[in-house]
Amino acid sequence: MRERRRAHRLSYNAVINIDEVYNQEHVIKGQREFPITILDISKGGIGFLAKEELPINFYFNAKIDLGNGKQFYSVLKILRVEELEEGYNYGCEFTGLADILSIYIDEFEQESQS
Image 1 (cartoon, rainbow, N blue to C red):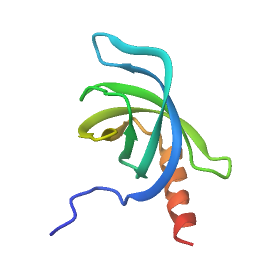
Image 2: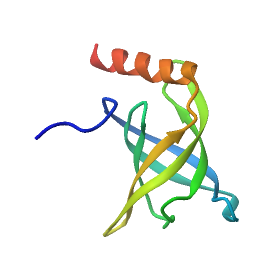
Image 3: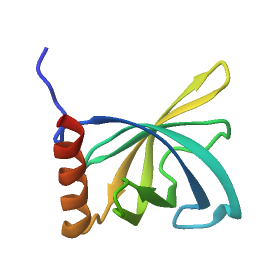
């Protein structure tokens, strides 16, 4: 089977908080943080687990910490959701990821392979 992903994914176990979930018309969860567990990360986006249900095609702001002082804020768009026994598995893409932040992910990948 041919790999269709645009960027290499890395396993990455961490917890971050989301502070707002919104789309073009309204905010559905605002000023209320809840934890997510990141399963993998790439320059294209992240896969994560959460206990809360979030709708597809909504956006959220997230602070991502790659360690070694490399952290950044980004907007992610929810592309897919799978209901699990104890929560939900999400797939999200970065929207407008700046080049410098993309470099952070490249450096994180190189450090992870060492």
